[in-house]
Amino acid sequence: MNVTAADGNLTAPPDSGSSLDTTVIRCTIALLLGVTINYINASMVHVFSKHDIFKTNPRYILFIHLVLNDIILLTTSVTLIVQAYIINRQYVFACVLLIVPAVLTSQNTPLNVLLMAAECYVSVCIPLRYNHICTVRRTYLVIGLMWTINCLSFLPDVVLMLATESQQFFVSRVYCLRDTVFRSSYSRNKRDATHILFLVVVWFTLCCTYFRILFVAKAADANANKARNTILIHGFQMLLCMIIYVQPMITQLMLTVFPEQIRFQNHGQFLVLTLDFDTKNCQWC
Image 1 (cartoon, helix red, strand yellow):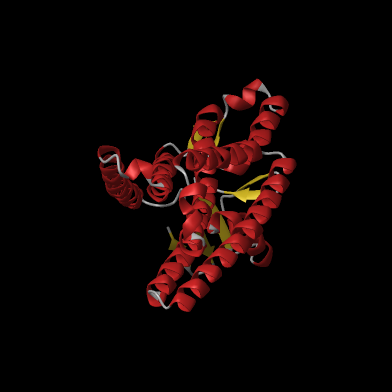
Image 2 (image 1 turned 90 degrees about the horizontal axis):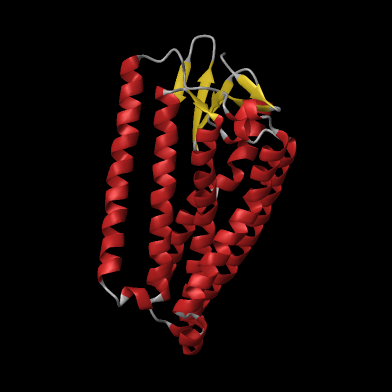
């Protein structure tokens, strides 16, 4: 297997043995999906900008921020996937420009959903104080606070890289992965600790708010089924968002259990798992 280890973290380039047709198909699918989803998201942003009534509702403000965040995340992720197949190795300074927004927006998504859950909790459980608690000004403040928290959690990695790496490293070509750019063991340990902290806080808050919403809806006998379905949908969405927090730990666990059979390729925020056996080659891309 063609695998490169960086400070104990296993990384790998796209399968060098894959045919040109396979590479073209994968890149085309990624581009088409990215353009299609971003077109839908851009349409929602356009509708939001054309109607002032949406700009006065905290719920729609949080939703459109989530949409804008997803546009940035999807654009950077698709760019990382395509360049990984076409360019393979990227200059470090160019890779950092893609990794930083991808990491920040991926960490923003669960927190944004958490804020939407808190807004829904206030709306259902304490409706008389909704207009006082959920104002437009406070909504923008918590969005700014969310970005500040994520920037502060990731900024030490950037500072440490700038302080410890040589100038030659920034003009070298590497596989554009987070662990090959931010190579310090401190960065990896801090990332895992931050993800665990966010995971606990977000899930605890979501469980408290959603169960409270469900109990209040049942007690009032007002659209209890609708409230339950909404909670299930948000819970599934949150489960998908939280993958970013547990993915590095799952990767290391799988590498420990199957060190010879499993190869992980991480393009941006997407995990590609390859199983290599003597007579079998199964890929999920």
